[in-house]
Image 1 (cartoon, rainbow, N blue to C red):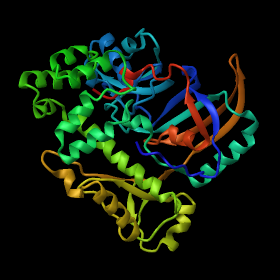
Image 2: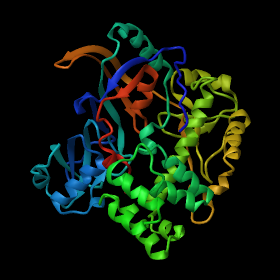
Image 3: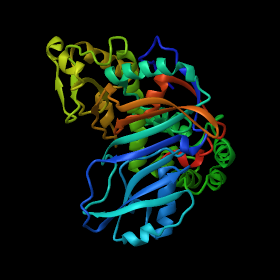
Length: 420
């Protein structure tokens, strides 16, 4: 994985422990629009603790006797956290949903609406995060650093969770884009690492030994993609393309999207040298109010708008229809693609059709605060802030803290891995 450069390069991050308890990381979704109160879709606000969104959907679907894809969500939330997010189900009465009694989750509110919730239908998220075993004597220094980030913006990196618990979903996407199916399947099904344990590690080891049928039985039941692919491998005598053909379009796009994210992070890191809020001639500037972009012909003329955070330079989510910058920004992006052995047309070769888009290089913080607190476990630093949708809290934490995960913070490997 690419080591992400920090914007506050001269600031020494404070030490700390993250997610000692689920309640140390609280995320509340901010809806894009209010529900109408009428319609065939029941909207419900779900609070969960220690569950990934996918595991919560799985458990709810079984309890309500519906298929998982019938449950709509606006975004995916952390597993090792307390999260509150809206979900939707059509033709299920609010009273039935409100009565659901499942471990580690509860329904806080129900209403109705006319359409299903879909990914992206949210304004953003509000976070309350407790950092334990930190350096409370540096509070004023950390508050000053937070103020700088509130003014300049935060690097809009895709966080580590974008790349799966093994950190290699981007490598699967890279192999798919390059047409190297053997490499893609090896990453998906094999190559056990120190991130793997239990049944998953055993399944990957069996794949490496060519025992595909046994590997399929070893994977936990929720990993349907792996089961299908391994079954096809076993029936075809190990033909990787047969196995790959069983992977649905949504999952393939997920992998390619992770690769796009990996490349975008490299552009963000490279632009830190000139400042993520500093426009260059040839940039495609992102209008934060609308999400539109426009070509910057005179950077000096447009810079005051960037200083006011009305606009920001944008970076690539590469694809065959992505609008491309010119001059120096265009050269940098073209060099990155060339270094990967790709062109934008590569993203529409064979069955691959990835249009691409733009993404701002920085994001703004809303209502950012840092204060001291204490509870039965002792003192902590509490960080509160709001982020636009698609932005990662871990990026802000990376600027201010050098955090170690609490013991057991990776326990949810099997439910956190990805959408299967």
